[in-house]
Image (tube, rainbow over all chains, first blue to last red; front, side):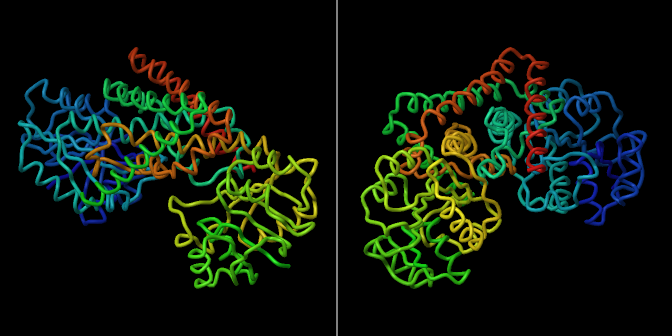
Length: 274
Length: 274
């Protein structure tokens, strides 16, 4: 089975290293300097010029590059092709716009770091993480099974299946909204000279503030209107606390905080059951 | 030197254990069952009925209880009395409303856990953390030096000094705002059924969502208007992202994300210098 990993940044590089760790030999597709780096690290065997000879192609590129490739490259007949983009509806729309020789499965690894590039990739990045697998009536079941086998060997511990629409809605909330909030949080004038005035709360809230605006602005645009809806909902909730503060309405503020606490406890219980 | 710790919850219990670890013998003041628990754990020598015999009193109680105690209890003449509350202006106003026999120093340990009570206290909770020490023209320098010696032995690594007003403004941003955001974040309808759809971003964003509404609603009320101002500023920033999303204005969104990234990088540099 010939495997190609397209895009050898943080995610693709980690995929290559994880597969190498599991005994697989993969080729890589990226800029020459990155390919060189990945070869030197023993993550890939060689750089690829074309896609046509590979049985499995894992695409770990930003959405636009991934869509261009899925739309225009020549793949081997029946090849299993998965992308790891953070939006899935837009990818499916692109792939299903024409008949394809390859069998497409949209996936999304729930793992990352606040740094990027092959140099920061890790063989262990996916250990214990979740890989979301998007399915629909066109999805080939044997392609999914083959990928699940690879993902398990890469270290993934769970592989929830869902539709692209469900994925995009959830991710707008759990990831995209979080990045906007963190990015906005550091903009306070009070953020200067804060050393010594922070515990873990501030660190947690601002860890992911330094998003790559090129990548993320595209992700948001490709996941409209879910991203906008989640952000509007959060703003509306925050506005309730602000109104209570401005009115010095302590019982109301207490009720709002209680509501959040109960919700958090509910989510923690749900998580334990899952 | 006779030391009393008033309040043996997460913070006071940890203070008792940290001081015991450093070889100090302290008494404790709390409900009988908590005192019993702390004695059994070797964190304190005995429970105290009154404050009048202690050279040092560390108050780790919620703000209202701390203020009541500072206002009405009889302390030893010249005793060094510190409180660990998360607001400092309100505490100073209470203490300085009357002449006091004791020497007051408002402090705030920058450490915590998302659980509470003596059972969760740790001798190591303050190791490497920062203890904020509030000073003003009435502060007794020798009282501060004595406390700094104790704090160092409790494991604190830095003790920034500032005014109560400066503290309250910073904490409104780094801690109080973070707790409101986290508490509001979990209220989205998309939060249900999220297992497998989250990476570290969501965990970070929601870790502190389960605030104790009794304690926190008081803290917010005691730190108005700084808390309201910080929240209003965050909402205004978030509204900018929402407007860009709703207008499908990708360049504008990119500019907003870039601004946040640069700000985050600036803060990370500042932190390294401090």
